[in-house]
Length: 434
Image 1 (cartoon, rainbow, N blue to C red):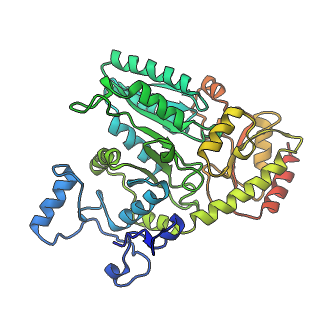
Image 2: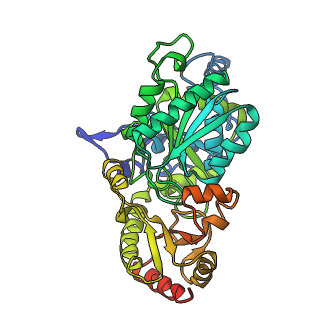
Image 3: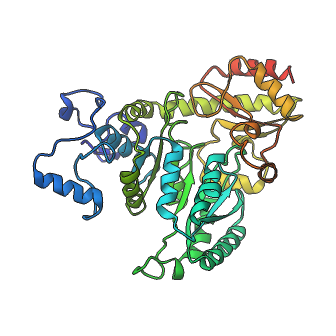
């Protein structure tokens, strides 16, 4: 497959590489775009090739499969997709999944064992937090969290307590899981502070792998980058080990597919790949093909949506019925602004709108929208609006929602690529109903 990333000594940009990286038309009858490979299995050139491929699949030989075997393990559309996804984050490898939550669940199951502790930022997407609190707890995995904007000192304290808790349970701190910006508050996590705290508290000793050096880091930092990735943030540059996406959102970008991915260094990806080989959950070929289509325009779509969000938020902040905006282009907290300046390349197009009032006022606003669609999800070509407290985060206990700032007067809005003035007109008439 064609994997050259330079021309005449120039390093090509991701937006350019999305047009052909990882695919050679010669191998597919000259087809300009990759065909959809609808096959469950692949013929081996020889029995020896089959044995060699399965040695890689099963882990008997390091390096993974060096050929196509079976579509639960690998297939052409998925491999091309994974090659291109890795480019955006500067990752060594990427893995695709049937949904963002499949990616998250398989990732956590890979690294968590009986007695282990997961430390995470708060808030998380409700299903992510629920998987840790409700399902992994059934298998003896516990958790501690810290607020999204926490300082290094607070994070170190949380990790120290988690390390003690894990030792008591006969386990380890198996993962630090972040979401930044947080869903739905848009609060940012200081990834650099998390890495420094992780290295200081968990850098060796009991955290070292069996047979490994005492300073080997074995607790990965994983981060859900769905709100800003892949254009507006690259968390691996700040010290994260694994970046997580719901590809359903900005990468897919057309509200017509569901998929997820993770990316990072090969040493972190290989164990997850092995569990995915067993459990399944790989992205299907048709969805992978659609994502390849979407990756060609992801920069254009995200840029337009971001420009729209700037104009719309500048209008919303002046409106008398708006109590506040959780928009990264209008941060009022010095700590959050510092994180933004160090970590972000853009403010994104998804934000929280705080209305004066509560659930009733939010419902009147949402029910009066004409252009913007009342629907969950985000990052599509169309503008979407929802009420997290009663929808995506309904399962979160009221006390936890209050602690995390998920209030009854919060509406989450994802701006699309429509005309910005048309959207302002829609928000204006919907606010009249409040």
